[in-house]
Image (cartoon, rainbow, N blue to C red; front, side, top):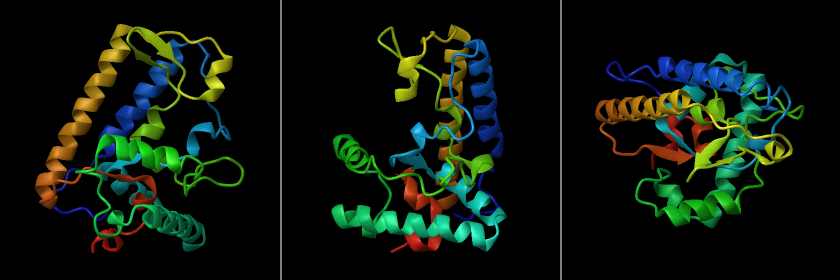
Length: 209
């Protein structure tokens, strides 16, 4: 996922997501069980944005070949499995144009696949460069006035509602992400925003039919 001279550098957005998580976690007074080696949310594929893919590639480029190669190999193997089930992805891995229920079906069907960057000890091989979803995962979410834990581990701890300020900040973060994506689309003359997680770990050229 190479950048162009006119492409936006998404690093500030990723740092903002990191900062939001830390503020939200602090506001919940130690009730979030996330920690090093806890990887409940690191299993299962999900859509990531092209911005996430750019950041993942930055992370892989900073690794030695010995560390990066196994991650990329796992991603390629997962892509083969997914494309066997959904051949249309071979010619166009972008999820734009796919029905939401079909994407949900993909995510559920391959919920057993660990993230390619997940190490045997439960740590992340590209942690400083993980997607925005990964950076904000763990904070309880609210739907129709009901607070839900972010993962199965959180069913064992009290769930507290975020403050209105932090919820507004989360909305603003999503708006900034959408803005960065719109700029990236113009820079790359592409209308594609999302791909499945494993595709973010392979070089951009492998995604071009």
